[in-house]
Amino acid sequence: MKHIALLSEINNMEKLLLTKTQTVKVDMLIRKPVEEVFEAFVNPDITTKFWFTKSSGRLEVGKQITWAWEMYNATALVDVKEIEINKRILVEWGDLGAMTKLEWIFTPYGDGFTYVSITNSGFEEDKDAVLAQAIDSTGGFSIVLDGAKVWLEHSINPNFIEDKFPKDLTEH
Image 1: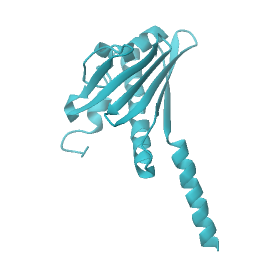
Image 2 (image 1 turned 90 degrees about the vertical axis):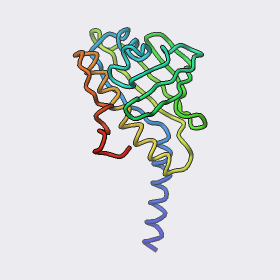
Image 3 (image 1 turned 120 degrees about the vertical axis):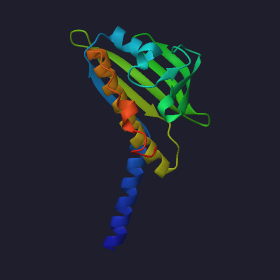
Image 4 (image 1 turned 45 degrees about the vertical axis):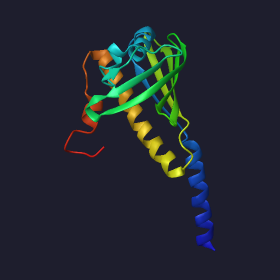
């Protein structure tokens, strides 16, 4: 009987984990004014310093943009849904048929600083896929915020994205 109870408890924990991982959120304080931080995420001339390597344009409501990570031969379609200047960006992004929602919230904090939250939601329903996507998204967007912080505060390109999967050392 103990084994059945334990299996039931594990199954309930898996269901809880699945529910909690359908939305991923990462946050970071960036010691720059909200206007500067917001601009860094809508303007690809800045974003390419710490995230993707190429973009087909600036984020504007109603536009479809393509972001590229040339070193990985990877692209993502970005469908810009909503923008509240210096407050919020909402896009759907990914591959056609597998788009997820991506939302940035920019909150002024203290004396000219910005607290940035990135939420990624809408993962596939298969629990193994959801878990894998949630883990990848959490790590990926943590690196993006780390890179944004280093670039915006110190004007240093940390190469986090490029160095995550160095050629010939890892499989991606």
